[in-house]
Structures are given as structure tokens and as C-alpha cells.
Length: 103
Image 1: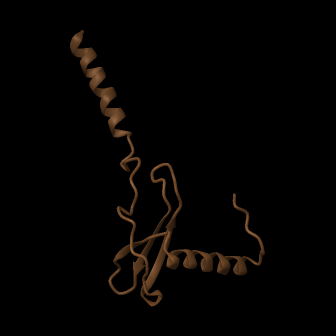
Image 2: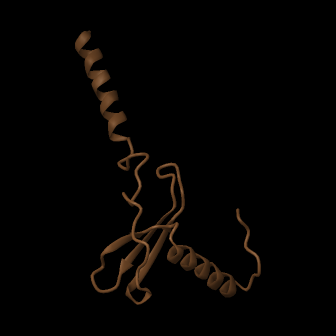
């Protein structure tokens, strides 16, 4: 009887562990504040990660053209703020809308 109970508990534990998320909670992509400036001509791709349950801060990750290297940019830097503002402006003009909902 004990061995059957042990096997049942072991199976339940295995199923619980196997179903857990592989991404640890509270982990951000950028481990430090990041750089304050990157030359725009070197930028291939920009990814903006909004705060979420797994990372409470906004992250700006830029992929460089030649090397494919990814760099974190400090979202509080003047470069990042201007970059985000210009991207929003371009999106609004492409959408044809004057105002954007914050929802």
C-alpha cells in the first residue's frame, strides 16, 4: 500500500514539475541599465518590451545590422525617449489617426 501511495505522489510531482513554465518569473532580458546611445545607421531591428508580470520594467532591445548582436538601451536615455516618440509619431501618421488610445 505504501509503495502505491509513493508511486502516486511521485507521478503527481512529476506532472506538476513538467507542467511548470520554463521562463522564470521576475527575470528581465536586460540585466543592466543598457547603453545610452546607438548610431541609427547601425540599427537593424528594435524590440520594445512593456512591463509585465515577468519583468516590471520597460526594455528596449536593438539588433545591430552587421553583427546581429543585441544590445539593451537604457529606456530613460534621451536617445531612447526620442526614438520611441518618433516611432509613435510615424505609426500615427501611417494609421491616419491624430490621437492614440492609451488602452
